[in-house]
Length: 319
Image (cartoon, rainbow, N blue to C red; front, side, top):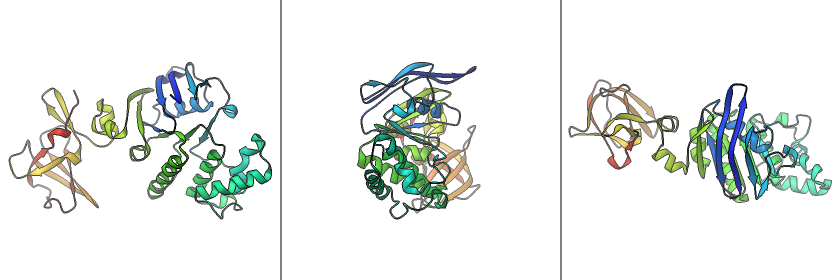
């Protein structure tokens, strides 16, 4: 396996930040580490990048043990949340900065820098100061500066968290496109489930320093291994089932004319453009959420009595 993390542990005082983290990533794979604030995902990526020393465990990259190598000699590069750009330098000088430590001539660096600016959508901005750029442009500069060093593994720590929602959607598509074109292995840390689902070839969900579940994003979403995963990754309706709790996603529920499995009363209608979510009081601890595509169902009003059912093949036994 191209990247192997085995038994990584890190403690800060009495707090176990990362507890026995195991992961294998193939060459060219994009692995997203997803979890709430404080779950250990940033500490994990810090250990891979060499900025945090593990208390236990090992890191192997392309057959080499890099567990105790300093960041500047590891074949990795990190894009940080705050970008960490040099404000007194131009865009091009920021991008090529690391090449001077690789023995590249000024002409070679400039040529490689211009190519990287074009790849990351920054053509024509090479002579601008980074302080004159928008947040999205600064993020592209940070990405270009990392990619130009041709790392074996690219590490990204919440790189889009400072941007507005619309720009995040656009830039995550660009990051995935660049990663796919270059075939680079990528570890991407985020607390944003939509971001993780859109980018990941494989998803790692963390909670309190430990891995809750690993797998393709479609599998983790459809078959969550724990209640934590079910609730953190997407929305979930929980109901009594044959073996305990039954989990059904809102998009797998529907209204029906027959008696249905649950009778209830509409509490609210939440319009969301292509999808409308209805909250239904059905005698459970929490209202059921029912997603309806626009035009697929008559409009329901608050106070209306309804029958609710769900797709049997999509229901998950949550224990």
